[in-house]
Amino acid sequence: MKKISLVVGLATIGVLALGDSAHAEETTASVEVKSGGMKISNATNITFNDVTVSKDGTTANEKEASSISIEDLRGSSSKGWTLTAKLKDENFKGMGLKLVPAIESNSTVATAGTPENLNAEPQTVASVADNKIKNTEFDTEVSLNAKLNVPATQLATNYTTTIVWNLSEGPGTE
Image (cartoon, rainbow, N blue to C red; front, side, top):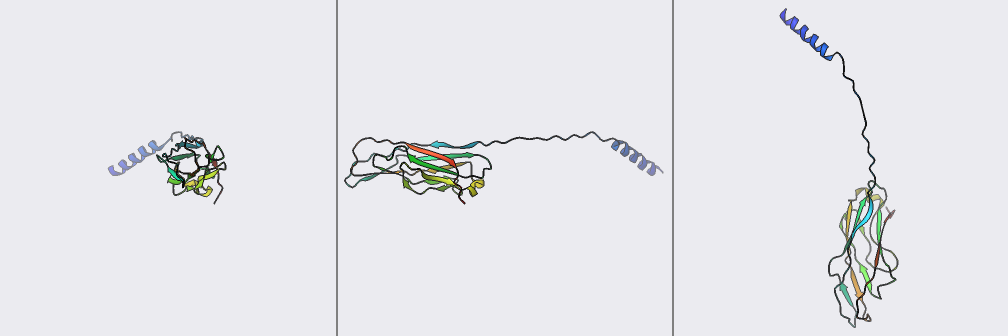
């Protein structure tokens, strides 16, 4: 008999403990994540080694490696991007300033442009296709590997030109 009353007593305590339930409330948490944009985060100047006038012309190489960096913090954009460069002046006093771009970071997604002499028309330096933008990293580093062809007829003096960089959403390629 003692066993039965112990079981009944425990059952009664269990019913009293479960009697009333506490009041529950639900809330939500929300946030709007905004685009951090896209920008050229670093562009180094290009300085060439000095050269001497030669009757056959000569090529000047960079003193230090030049590069440009793109920072893409747009989030889940469906648009890729294109980086172009052109000379502010029509030419560099008759010399051929050639960029031979190489992707140093984000190389599985970004594509280097075709090596060309810069002129007044925009030349593609690097790009990320629309269909690859979801796999891109935040930063893309591009080595410029610049070369300068100096013709035999070049006058002996210091020369400077301005390179205009443009980063735009696109290229809209597959």
